[in-house]
Image 1 (tube, helix red, strand yellow):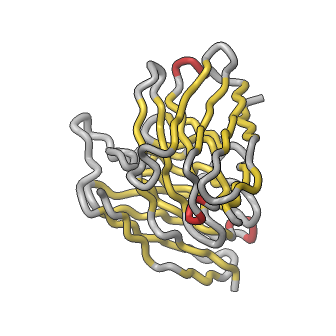
Image 2 (spheres, helix red, strand yellow):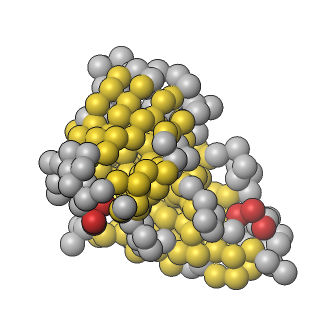
Length: 116
Length: 112
Protein backbone atom coordinates (compact mmCIF):
# COMPACT_ATOMS: atom_id res chain seq x y z
CA UNK A 1 0.00 0.00 0.00
CA UNK A 2 1.25 3.42 -0.94
CA UNK A 3 1.38 5.57 2.16
CA UNK A 4 3.17 8.18 4.21
CA UNK A 5 2.88 8.14 8.00
CA UNK A 6 4.04 11.13 10.04
CA UNK A 7 4.94 11.12 13.71
CA UNK A 8 6.69 13.29 16.26
CA UNK A 9 4.27 16.15 16.71
CA UNK A 10 3.28 17.54 20.08
CA UNK A 11 3.26 20.51 22.41
CA UNK A 12 6.51 22.47 22.72
CA UNK A 13 7.41 25.77 24.34
CA UNK A 14 8.53 28.77 22.28
CA UNK A 15 12.23 28.44 21.53
CA UNK A 16 12.09 24.69 21.82
CA UNK A 17 12.83 21.94 19.31
CA UNK A 18 10.95 19.04 17.77
CA UNK A 19 11.81 16.41 15.16
CA UNK A 20 9.13 15.13 12.83
CA UNK A 21 9.41 11.82 11.00
CA UNK A 22 7.62 10.45 7.97
CA UNK A 23 7.74 6.75 7.07
CA UNK A 24 7.21 5.91 3.41
CA UNK A 25 5.98 2.67 1.90
CA UNK A 26 4.62 1.32 -1.38
CA UNK A 27 6.70 3.44 -3.77
CA UNK A 28 10.33 4.03 -4.73
CA UNK A 29 11.43 6.41 -2.00
CA UNK A 30 15.06 6.71 -3.06
CA UNK A 31 14.22 8.47 -6.35
CA UNK A 32 11.35 10.60 -5.00
CA UNK A 33 11.37 14.32 -4.28
CA UNK A 34 9.85 14.77 -0.82
CA UNK A 35 8.37 17.77 0.93
CA UNK A 36 6.83 19.11 4.11
CA UNK A 37 3.67 21.22 3.86
CA UNK A 38 1.94 22.77 6.86
CA UNK A 39 -1.49 24.13 7.66
CA UNK A 40 -2.09 26.47 10.57
CA UNK A 41 -5.45 26.03 12.36
CA UNK A 42 -8.25 27.25 10.10
CA UNK A 43 -5.79 28.45 7.45
CA UNK A 44 -4.58 27.37 4.02
CA UNK A 45 -1.67 25.25 2.88
CA UNK A 46 1.93 26.47 3.14
CA UNK A 47 4.94 24.77 1.63
CA UNK A 48 7.77 24.41 4.15
CA UNK A 49 10.66 22.52 2.55
CA UNK A 50 11.67 20.11 -0.21
CA UNK A 51 14.50 17.61 -0.49
CA UNK A 52 15.62 16.07 -3.75
CA UNK A 53 16.77 12.45 -4.08
CA UNK A 54 20.40 13.56 -3.98
CA UNK A 55 19.85 15.57 -0.81
CA UNK A 56 19.58 19.12 -2.15
CA UNK A 57 17.27 21.16 0.11
CA UNK A 58 15.08 24.23 -0.23
CA UNK A 59 13.04 26.14 2.37
CA UNK A 60 10.42 28.83 2.70
CA UNK A 61 12.02 32.02 4.02
CA UNK A 62 10.16 31.92 7.35
CA UNK A 63 11.84 28.67 8.43
CA UNK A 64 15.24 28.89 6.73
CA UNK A 65 18.00 28.63 9.33
CA UNK A 66 15.64 27.13 11.94
CA UNK A 67 14.31 23.99 10.20
CA UNK A 68 16.27 21.23 8.49
CA UNK A 69 14.79 18.68 6.13
CA UNK A 70 16.63 15.38 5.73
CA UNK A 71 16.10 11.86 4.53
CA UNK A 72 17.37 8.35 5.22
CA UNK A 73 16.85 6.30 2.08
CA UNK A 74 17.83 3.07 3.86
CA UNK A 75 15.03 3.61 6.35
CA UNK A 76 12.67 5.05 3.72
CA UNK A 77 12.13 7.99 6.03
CA UNK A 78 11.84 11.77 5.79
CA UNK A 79 12.56 14.11 8.68
CA UNK A 80 12.04 17.72 9.71
CA UNK A 81 14.20 19.04 12.52
CA UNK A 82 12.54 22.17 13.89
CA UNK A 83 14.53 24.47 16.18
CA UNK A 84 13.79 27.86 17.73
CA UNK A 85 10.08 27.22 17.38
CA UNK A 86 7.66 30.12 17.39
CA UNK A 87 3.93 30.39 18.02
CA UNK A 88 3.42 30.96 14.30
CA UNK A 89 4.87 27.50 13.58
CA UNK A 90 1.77 25.96 15.17
CA UNK A 91 0.21 23.83 12.44
CA UNK A 92 -0.55 20.39 11.11
CA UNK A 93 2.57 19.23 9.26
CA UNK A 94 2.10 16.96 6.26
CA UNK A 95 4.79 15.09 4.41
CA UNK A 96 4.18 14.63 0.71
CA UNK A 97 5.77 13.08 -2.35
CA UNK A 98 6.39 15.35 -5.30
CA UNK A 99 5.90 14.01 -8.81
CA UNK A 100 5.41 15.95 -12.05
CA UNK A 101 5.40 19.25 -10.16
CA UNK A 102 2.58 18.16 -7.85
CA UNK A 103 2.16 16.40 -4.51
CA UNK A 104 0.51 13.09 -5.33
CA UNK A 105 0.88 11.27 -2.00
CA UNK A 106 0.14 12.89 1.37
CA UNK A 107 0.41 11.67 4.92
CA UNK A 108 -2.31 12.06 7.51
CA UNK A 109 -0.46 14.93 9.20
CA UNK A 110 0.99 15.50 12.65
CA UNK A 111 0.03 18.44 14.88
CA UNK A 112 2.68 20.76 16.27
CA UNK A 113 1.61 23.25 18.94
CA UNK A 114 4.02 25.93 20.12
CA UNK A 115 2.75 27.45 23.34
CA UNK A 116 4.05 28.37 26.83
CA UNK B 1 7.53 34.68 -5.11
CA UNK B 2 4.69 33.60 -7.41
CA UNK B 3 1.34 34.71 -6.01
CA UNK B 4 -1.63 32.43 -6.66
CA UNK B 5 -5.10 34.03 -6.61
CA UNK B 6 -8.27 31.96 -6.59
CA UNK B 7 -11.86 32.99 -7.19
CA UNK B 8 -14.42 32.67 -5.88
CA UNK B 9 -13.42 31.98 -2.29
CA UNK B 10 -16.83 30.49 -1.52
CA UNK B 11 -18.89 28.44 -3.94
CA UNK B 12 -22.38 27.19 -3.07
CA UNK B 13 -23.56 24.65 -5.63
CA UNK B 14 -26.72 22.62 -6.16
CA UNK B 15 -26.04 18.87 -6.61
CA UNK B 16 -25.99 17.95 -10.28
CA UNK B 17 -25.05 21.46 -11.35
CA UNK B 18 -21.63 22.43 -12.75
CA UNK B 19 -19.01 24.39 -10.84
CA UNK B 20 -15.93 26.32 -11.87
CA UNK B 21 -12.96 27.72 -9.94
CA UNK B 22 -10.44 30.17 -11.34
CA UNK B 23 -6.77 30.37 -10.43
CA UNK B 24 -4.42 33.07 -11.61
CA UNK B 25 -0.66 33.21 -11.10
CA UNK B 26 1.48 36.35 -10.94
CA UNK B 27 3.97 34.74 -13.34
CA UNK B 28 3.60 32.29 -16.20
CA UNK B 29 3.65 28.65 -15.12
CA UNK B 30 4.47 27.46 -18.63
CA UNK B 31 7.73 25.52 -18.61
CA UNK B 32 10.03 25.28 -21.62
CA UNK B 33 8.81 21.74 -22.38
CA UNK B 34 5.24 22.96 -22.84
CA UNK B 35 3.91 21.79 -19.47
CA UNK B 36 2.13 24.11 -17.09
CA UNK B 37 3.34 23.50 -13.55
CA UNK B 38 -0.08 23.93 -11.97
CA UNK B 39 -1.89 21.46 -9.76
CA UNK B 40 -5.33 21.31 -8.14
CA UNK B 41 -6.11 19.74 -4.77
CA UNK B 42 -9.21 19.01 -2.74
CA UNK B 43 -9.13 18.92 1.03
CA UNK B 44 -12.26 17.26 2.31
CA UNK B 45 -13.36 18.08 5.88
CA UNK B 46 -11.03 16.51 8.41
CA UNK B 47 -8.80 14.95 5.75
CA UNK B 48 -5.42 15.53 4.16
CA UNK B 49 -5.32 17.25 0.76
CA UNK B 50 -5.63 14.99 -2.27
CA UNK B 51 -4.32 15.64 -5.76
CA UNK B 52 -6.97 16.11 -8.44
CA UNK B 53 -5.12 17.57 -11.42
CA UNK B 54 -1.42 17.84 -12.27
CA UNK B 55 0.41 19.74 -15.01
CA UNK B 56 -2.65 21.89 -15.53
CA UNK B 57 -4.96 19.37 -17.16
CA UNK B 58 -4.07 15.79 -16.23
CA UNK B 59 -6.38 13.93 -13.87
CA UNK B 60 -4.63 12.11 -11.06
CA UNK B 61 -5.16 8.40 -10.59
CA UNK B 62 -8.65 7.55 -9.37
CA UNK B 63 -10.07 11.05 -9.88
CA UNK B 64 -13.57 10.97 -11.43
CA UNK B 65 -13.84 12.30 -14.97
CA UNK B 66 -16.33 14.96 -13.87
CA UNK B 67 -13.21 16.90 -12.77
CA UNK B 68 -11.24 18.69 -15.48
CA UNK B 69 -8.46 21.25 -15.55
CA UNK B 70 -7.66 23.74 -18.26
CA UNK B 71 -5.66 26.88 -18.96
CA UNK B 72 -2.11 27.90 -19.70
CA UNK B 73 0.39 30.53 -18.69
CA UNK B 74 -1.22 32.51 -15.89
CA UNK B 75 -4.94 31.61 -16.10
CA UNK B 76 -6.30 28.24 -15.06
CA UNK B 77 -9.70 26.74 -14.35
CA UNK B 78 -10.94 23.69 -12.48
CA UNK B 79 -14.36 22.51 -13.62
CA UNK B 80 -16.71 20.00 -12.07
CA UNK B 81 -19.27 18.94 -14.64
CA UNK B 82 -21.89 17.77 -12.14
CA UNK B 83 -21.28 18.41 -8.45
CA UNK B 84 -21.92 15.57 -6.03
CA UNK B 85 -22.27 15.73 -2.25
CA UNK B 86 -18.84 14.10 -1.80
CA UNK B 87 -17.17 17.04 -3.60
CA UNK B 88 -17.56 19.38 -0.61
CA UNK B 89 -14.37 20.78 0.84
CA UNK B 90 -11.69 23.33 0.07
CA UNK B 91 -10.03 23.41 -3.35
CA UNK B 92 -6.50 24.73 -3.75
CA UNK B 93 -4.39 25.50 -6.77
CA UNK B 94 -0.62 25.25 -6.43
CA UNK B 95 2.32 26.25 -8.57
CA UNK B 96 5.27 23.85 -8.70
CA UNK B 97 7.40 25.83 -11.14
CA UNK B 98 9.75 27.40 -8.64
CA UNK B 99 10.46 27.63 -4.95
CA UNK B 100 8.89 28.75 -2.81
CA UNK B 101 6.06 26.49 -3.94
CA UNK B 102 2.89 28.52 -3.40
CA UNK B 103 -0.80 27.76 -3.00
CA UNK B 104 -3.93 29.76 -3.66
CA UNK B 105 -6.06 30.89 -0.72
CA UNK B 106 -8.52 28.07 -1.21
CA UNK B 107 -12.10 27.92 -2.48
CA UNK B 108 -14.70 26.40 -0.17
CA UNK B 109 -17.33 24.43 -2.08
CA UNK B 110 -20.56 23.79 -0.23
CA UNK B 111 -23.77 22.10 -1.21
CA UNK B 112 -26.88 24.28 -1.38
